[in-house]
Amino acid sequence: MNFGMSYDPGQDAPEESITTWEWIDALCLAVLRDKAKWHGEAFHFARDKFAALPILT
Image (cartoon, rainbow, N blue to C red; front, top):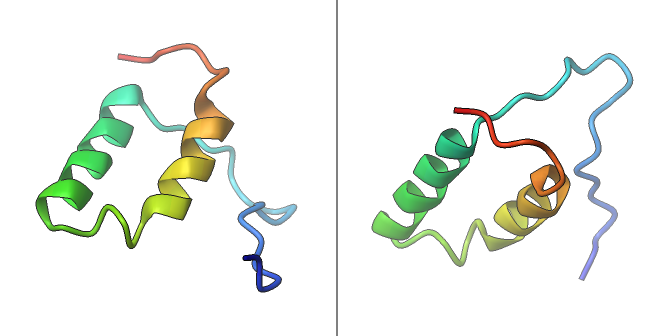
């Protein structure tokens, strides 16, 4: 359910850059702290957004 929240950055937002390993680290920490369900929506949108980008190491 969307309550009018938007995950889109504003016009003055810096270009986003996240490595594959940073995303995996964040997901693992969420799982280890038992917060994966709480942050699930954010991980879902981040995965979709960055899926088409090349893998950075």
